[in-house]
Length: 514
Picture 1: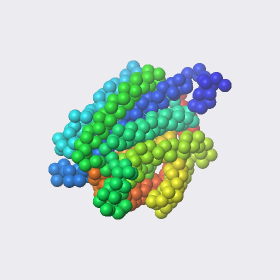
Picture 2 (picture 1 turned 90 degrees about the vertical axis):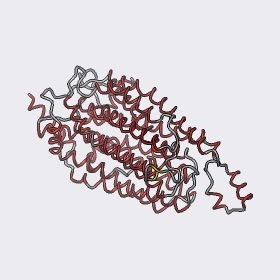
Picture 3 (picture 1 turned 30 degrees about the vertical axis):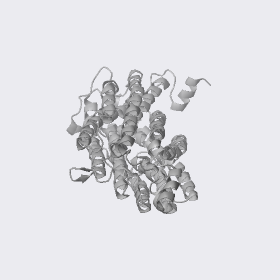
Picture 4 (picture 1 turned 180 degrees about the vertical axis):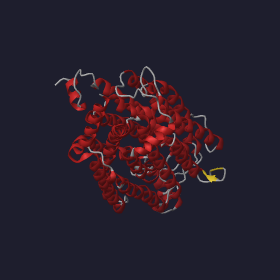
């Protein structure tokens, strides 16, 4: 079988029929692949850059009257929520955009360079450890980055509904695209901790050092264990400086690789289904949003599910670095989720056809809540328990993968629902809700991670964490996921769009236009 024939089969497209073709679908996915390089370096590592490289997680560091770690938590939460509620505004701007390239595509071209500049600026190595002014400057840059990223992200996902209105083809398009996005995020998530762990190893005690401490000072193994992974006295700032430069270089490399992918996606995609009527105002778009009850159910579900994968955000990295004493283990945690995500990508088309997207979504999140419940009661403080948790992480890749793929397809269906109900598509405002969900998830993930960091009593300067602190960190990361998994399934019981109903709506819309 030729590659092109295989791709037609994967995407469900028809050769030379004037509609979506594999080359275009791949270009769309490549843009998402590059986009996730940038999103992940910010979403997963800016927080730890602030706490561990700029040392706002160190004991006694404050911003004004607020502890440094809590200031970081509030910055992450506040910026992301502010940015999330910018998404409807951006969605309305997209719906009002009229250019020779379409309404969504041009933003891939226009915003690639501004996003690149803001991403690098967030990790500038000139910032001084523990300096409040550095915290304020990074915070301002982060807010500007968030706005710039929104300007590209909302139209990027809205573009999928402009490329095709076939729910099966669009579902396949988004399935492959989410796989590429996950791959892009996974590359960053896996390799950056390995690199940072390697370059800072010289500042940490080894097992031999611990034994020597026990012998020299006459302390117990438990006391000596508290020093594992700590920075050698007198070299704290050298360690932080090394981290600053490592994150900066990583950001530069990822941006250089990602930016051409934005332009490739712009050049090789095409908009086929866009409204030609008068562009709607923001107020009108917000009214449309509240007429789309099916979309609102997805939004509520997404907000309730904001903490379901918190262990893949900053909290998981803190757990690996301070409890497992090797931040490279964060790469293992994220890699364990990958097989389940790959299984999910194969399951989604079958589950959607067999059970509908709605019931597939509900089932996998209930399953995920049960798996995390097992993790919580088993714990982590023995080798066999870590094996159980590793198996659980593989299984948790299934709800994570299904959610990443199926939510976009469901929102695409709500665009058709809105057009069927009101005569207006509103791709921008509808897919702005998906980016809003994503950003709230990132905000919650970062916030819980840093709150857990503070509650566990971790000192980023010494790396010390007590056994009670380690248990607190574990409880907060896992229990928040259990609650979130179950909670996000509840609104979807009221969702009514089925594959059959969507096809009927598309036919009725086409008949009206004739």
